[in-house]
Image 1 (cartoon, helix red, strand yellow):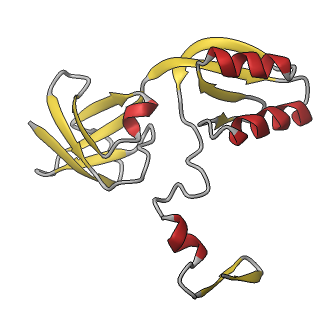
Image 2 (cartoon, helix red, strand yellow):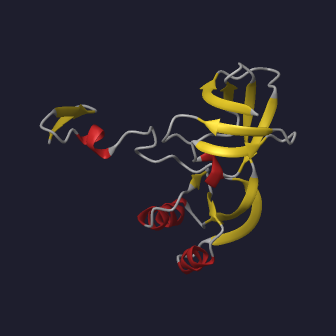
Length: 164
């Protein structure tokens, strides 16, 4: 069985392909199969989302490319950027994973959220597509306490500083 242990640089000819939907690409421990049917185990660092196009190295040095599997999503468009921003705000307020495009949003299919978006004036299209939502402000795998400096340290952000 192939054991995938770490991210690595892409290669022109990977050994295989690992096709996973978003809800499995957020896991760091997983028993799965490559597109070829070969069994594989994922044992990577916790807290990081696997993205389509990334590569993983196995214990024996083989490289596998990750692909985002098509899944049921709602493709959200609006009459203008203000309405699209408003829709994004309401989805974010509900902590919904959202993929952000130049003139669209995508979320996992959900009739309750769909009704909310329709009520905000959005247009929805159900489709099968790879889903690559934003990882979020803390998507790098850091904990809240590390980021905000709880424990008496002073951290500076951008041009100014904030004491905690």
